[in-house]
Length: 259
Image 1 (spheres, helix red, strand yellow):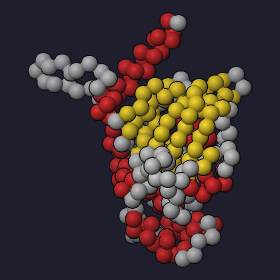
Image 2 (cartoon, rainbow, N blue to C red; image 1 turned 45 degrees about the vertical axis):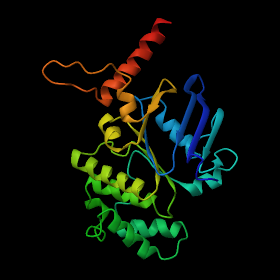
Image 3 (cartoon, one colour; image 1 turned 180 degrees about the vertical axis):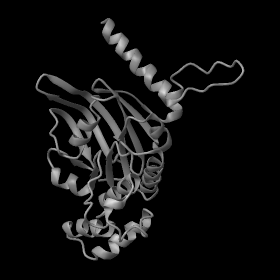
Image 4 (cartoon, one colour; image 1 turned 30 degrees about the vertical axis):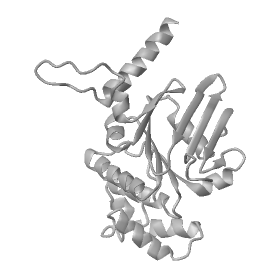
């Protein structure tokens, strides 16, 4: 694989469940070391797409290449290249934070599980809490530990499926800081979220998935330019990402209803 090739390449991805068509031909590229946010309403197909990218589901049509490996032809190589963090923290509350990390390192057959755990605790500001049972952690701390566990083995690509669901504002800020650290360290992040401010804060590029297709893909600045310039009365109001999202999705829905 060459570094010029995107970390994730999706072309014409389709997926249906019996009579329900979820993905209708998705195209998406994710550059190395970038954070791409995949936005969409409930049922838009975000989690289905992540499950296909992580080899948990097979696509019906199209091609998906992750870290240079086809997800259908070489799923084992894809799994070695990625880590998946789901919507709920997958941590053992009976164990301490450090013990959770050591357990995963040993399951991955890595040497030096203790030092690996200590480095990740320090990286995610959990050193002081490392000896405490996870049952005593706040939601944000559990999520940070979950992300730290996902990084054991240094996967170059990580999928975060709605990582701040159910967290309070302080917990969300803690997770945002952790995600930014990932990209700064060279990790490629594909993030699904329903929170538009989360995409604004984190993403280098934003893709909106609506009714099974990517209807727009660009930087925050590029997406804002899709709306008319702000009208100046007493103050200038620039469109937010929420304005862009609702206008684009609403326009598509109205057009499809008319047809």
